[in-house]
Length: 305
Image (spheres, rainbow, N blue to C red):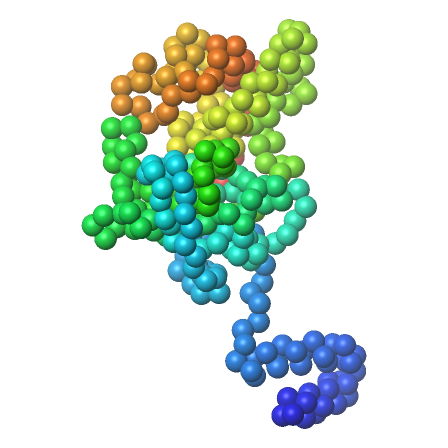
């Protein structure tokens, strides 16, 4: 009743200023929510910096925690229980844009995207701890190469049997979530028509295209081409393309099993890649030397700003 009386008086005042009844109603609804002690929905976001306590507090305070079970856990093995924030609830804070994907970026530069329209986001969890962790840690350390690293502060995990979900990414050390435009994502890493025109034959074009698809599926999470991709491993095209300073035989061995080339390498082996697959990958990398966004340290520094 009190709100109705206030609304009537507020509407008269607003109408006397020449505002429409609809505008007066919208303003009243906002006032009514605040008067009742309710928070208005936060504005939609395109990026979530998980290192920013002000932003995370606003998001997480409105997102109830959840516990899920992961069978055949890819990080810690066996069956694990995780606590965290439901991925679907977090993504509800993001703008809804056609042709967009969600990127998860880790503290070491690893980057991976999911399509929220096709991925089972209802199974996803931005985990803050695993219950099996010893010594009061949120997560136990993981062995990466010859080093031990902690996978916190956040891990993206999926409920259910991971053997059936193995195509879904499990990024750890997540520090940022952001919306990316799929139409522009990796546009500089994909061989363009001008680059393809410089190849010797249609068979070579087909091979380079296959190599690009393999690169997207296996390498882009850790490596960048033309500064698009992950930052865990080295940039592979600028200022010098990797095929301009690596011999093909050594590069092929490095892709197949890095430990055979460099002891203690953090890069994982790729036993599922066949020799023709690796040849396609190297063909793609070699072709990209014709398509550089910069070719000196200074020009690359300027491009990256």
